[in-house]
Length: 256
Ligand SMILES: Nc1ncnc2c1ncn2[C@@H]1O[C@H](COP(=O)(O)OP(=O)(O)OP(=O)(O)O)[C@@H](O)[C@H]1O
Image 1 (cartoon, helix red, strand yellow):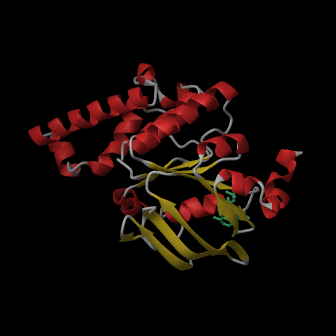
Image 2 (tube, rainbow, N blue to C red):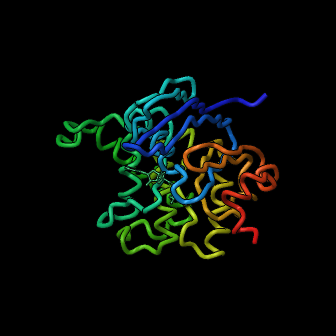
Image 3 (cartoon, rainbow, N blue to C red):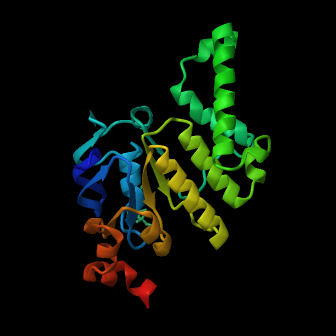
């Protein structure tokens, strides 16, 4: 039987008079690649923001790995094992690629501010461990060769990979990627697909928002479709693709 990792029920989120999420429920199983699609403004990023603690939902239930995360703050959510990337890349541009990943890693380390100031032996050892792990992650996502470059000087594709490395540095159980293939050429998209499959086979569950329908249909185990804040369909790609409501709301143009 499927093993539920993340479960939300009856989630509502309003912005003034706008009902951005309207009674949304879904379950993501451990080890799957779960996709979220829908037209612009459907509520996909809002749902990501709710699942990562950036937005507080008005109503609903949210459990993750047996923990109640309803209305929890982002740092609690990260500690619980959910990491994300953003639609608009958010890196520290003046820092090197390596330093960007090290920042992500600090979520899982003990040395507090005092240790960092005093630079005692334990802190130094921990810094080295963080650096080593960050290097390993850069190699893992295929950009070890640019470890010492400033993030802002990296190519777009490399910046996207760097964001994934930084998210992986928090040791997530669930990695949520908001439009990871946006702006990528077909070759970069193919490489990204291979990377996501590698991440999944390492035991991390994936949640994706992506407008590249072809990519979603080949990569995802299951897909949910949002439209005007409501989940209008959910299922394996083949089911979703042939669902008349989905074709009308979203796939119509893509199929034409
Ligand atoms: N902070 C906010 N304040 C007010 N309205 C918001 C806020 N965030 C999102 N919205 C509105 O909520 C609705 C859903 O937006 P959201 O960004 O979640 O859609 P989306 O499905 O991610 O769209 P896209 O594919 O264009 O990224 C939109 O009408 C948007 O304008």
